[in-house]
Amino acid sequence: MNKEDKIRQTEANTKWEKRKYSSLILENYPNVLEISLDLQLDYPNAFSIHKNHFTPKFNPTDKAYFEISCINKDCLFSDLDLDNEIRNTINQKLDFFKGHKICNGYNTFSCYERKQGTCMTRLDYEIKIKYKNAL
Ligand SMILES: [Zn+2]
Image 1 (cartoon, helix red, strand yellow):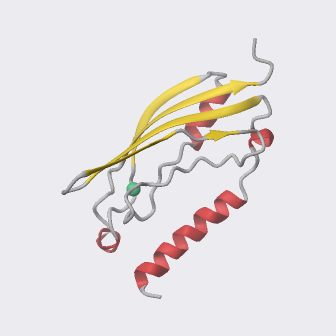
Image 2 (cartoon, rainbow, N blue to C red; image 1 turned 180 degrees about the vertical axis):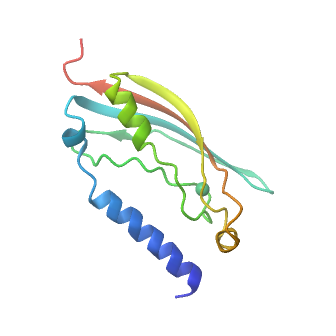
């Protein structure tokens, strides 16, 4: 295994463990019936813009883990995590919140080695929450 593979393996293990030890949605947010996300990802590079759109849904028995995979396949240490945004939305008892984030991961392995050059994938997100016992 070369150096890049080792770093990528370490990152993958860290995220896998974080997911594994995450609580369930029903434990963290007992009043929540469903969390739906609308995610638009844009990764511009020199040649093209990669786009991806998806709409995952989470039920109470799913893990409360909301790290969004970066669509730049060379990205290292992506940080597109909606954990804080979802927690704040629920704590404020809102049923809708939207915003955007830029990935601060390293664009490529050589960017990681130089410690400069962020990925810049853009995530536009919408969070919709359905609560139990909603009027
Ligand atoms: Zn990224």
